Image (cartoon, rainbow, N blue to C red; front, side, top):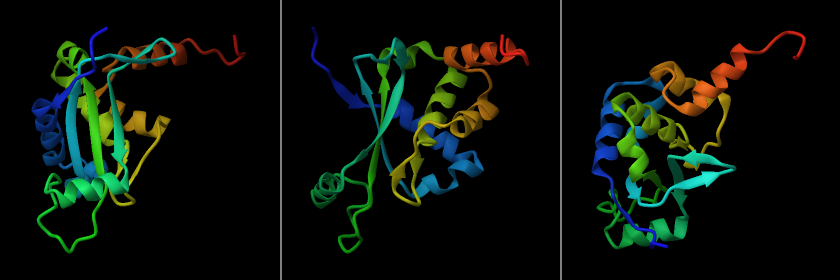
Length: 158
């Protein structure tokens, strides 16, 4: 089995910058967050469901060490309290399979997991999925399946 490899994802960062520049109200506080974008060569999965991307928060001590070594974007101000660093990890093969709308929707979805004001991650919710679906429509197989389930619902529960 091949080793897991990570590398900087400038394409993903470019899409994120485009989304931030678009002025979406739900992303207005993200301009000030320290967010990194990386590709990974291995697919992740959960209960048979393909995971295209994930977002993580770098723990405080590690973030402070990165900043002290000048590896964080806001490291120039040595008197500033180190803020959190967030990392959006994208499965490279999955990224290549997406069209431009799918890529924008995926990055938007991952950005919605970041609460930069409180410096924390936001779990999956229907509201978070709904905001991305409102912006980009039915962009993933999971959303298509969910939509089909909702459309097949009957009032008697059958």
